[in-house]
Length: 530
Image 1: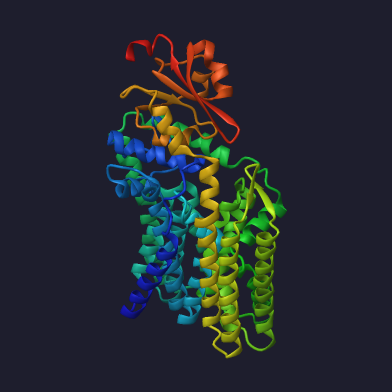
Image 2: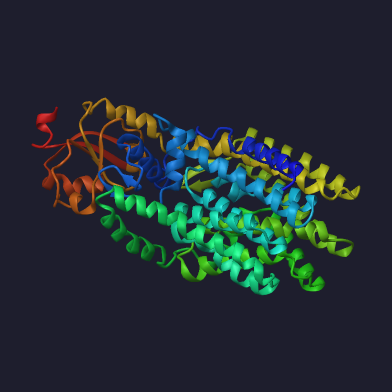
């Protein structure tokens, strides 16, 4: 890698992070996924046990611990929303920088810049780069691995084989078997590109590293934690749960994936037509990108119960393909790409105007949401100005700059809507921290609080400055296998079911989004602790 490429990648990283960080900690930790991650990080910080991902009360997390380790390092003594989400933002910006290098080194600087611009401004990738979960970290690991694979296919090299393996190993430490995705890309890529036989030793070392990294963690956890066998017993049920049937329709999935990379998905039909007509040779960039996209679709449609977010690892591949198409298109083929994007941006502008002036009221989580007029007008202004500038650049034959300028408008729109509308909406819907302060006034310091994983209880537990214990469904249903905690925090339905068996006495009750959350003291067991 040249010094100029490395410095350029650092600049791309800093710019991407500058868009992902503003207001990242303003939103309450309200979703169950983020809250579960936060509870595992909190448990690591409280107990000093980092070997296994645990929730308070010796329960186990559902994913390997790499993201939790990173968040715990960032958090220091105190965990908050910013520190929980910072690793996701850094991983997202790191992926954008890697895609810049991917396109630059395997094609041209223009392809790298275009791909980075398209990825950083993809709505789904933007959203998940600001959420305290491991999705963007997984995408970073997959991208790192496949960048190494493509470089190895192009020129061999022991270092590229090592990069390929390190990305896989870190991906497995992030999200288990999903981290093996690059192996599904490598097999057909090797068959198509036909590297010289002597090079395979370099890639073999990468495979050894890929297996070795998670095995080192497993070995250390086995040696240092007496309950490792119990943790291992939970893995098979978790994998089986991932393989369950999805409630999302095929049309819903397709729409969700298309919106996740809008407006750049509008470039893909034209790019596909160009690939079919020109039939380019086995370029490592195209072979790896197409295999990457195919592997994600096959794995998460055929083998795993799909959610829209599971297709996030395909976003870098889509950006690379769209960037290659834009860079390569000429003459009539150029119109296959420019017209759909122009119409898509125009439709987005009209849609935002209608929603703002209407006003059109949407319903999220069954609550009404109307886009504030100031936010809508700011979004329209950003898209109109950058859209017009992109059109002028395209007309003046400065094709590389056009998508980059438009990407800036899309990013500004996403950031304005997220900080100015989406975050305040969810904070009004789920005032978690204010509710916790109210509950803490009723709970003596040092008294253990039992909580369930239902509804928003996990989010409340994250901020509760008391010893915690996650209660199993068996315990809540009236057959506790261990001594009862001093207090319990449950949704009203679970409180009603456990009230007699646990001798619960209601202390306080709060309604969040039409769900009653009950703080109760446990009779007998808690009487002496107050």
